Image (cartoon, rainbow, N blue to C red; front, side, top):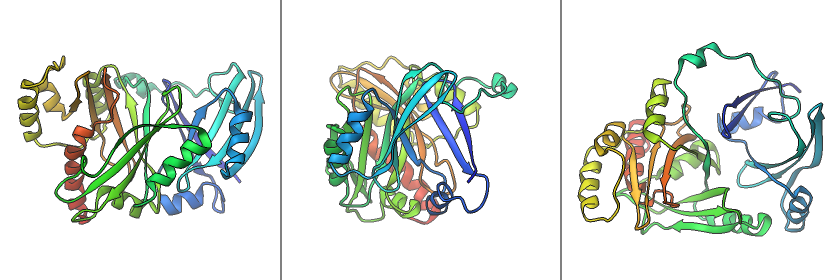
Length: 326
């Protein structure tokens, strides 16, 4: 079996791209046939690999690959892989005995001359990774993270808070105790028409990663730079900003950014009594209406844009209508 691996490695945001070299591959090809392009594995850096795997076994988790080691002249890395929701897996990586830039077996590529001519994305780290589930599965998935990985419930919303005229969702955000890993778990709620969560599950072929949120310290610069690099973002109506301006007049929150600029770039704002966040979502990254990215900037706000879910859903519903799926 031959698998081609490509790596985007400019910041702590690391994407590993995998594709089969030959037909008959039994690891990547079935996933591509069933799901199309998508997230197969969410890796986590860990310090206590042995106890994590031991607990996973004791709690009945499916072990895809037990602890193994890989090494080169930079040292040794220990791994283990377990099954989570759908066909998604978690790889645990212990790099405590490794000094290299990434992992054994990877070599630095020649510098891409084109990248020098493009502005940097200014993306600092992965803020959260969202998983979509079929209706009725959210609670069991959240319980799995509590039981197997000892995560806790960090944040949640239900369909009374997040709905449009046509659709609704429920969401539970799971986090580790250090709260530097956050995994929102979504499921659809009953509505008049097919929700974007249902559409995702249908086109992806089951549960899977809906989007990856990337944190930035300057969302205006990031969005402008990403647009120059060809990234397309969802559009929201100008009426969103008219309503927002009116609400902010009656709030103690003061937004430092120019609202006219945010409106021009179609960046969303959510806020509470402590602070606010800025966020924007890309269009789907492939023909199937499944995986997309989010860019997010936080200003003393630890939520996930519940106030923007309606605007986001309505923007996605416009795209759904174009596909004839609403």
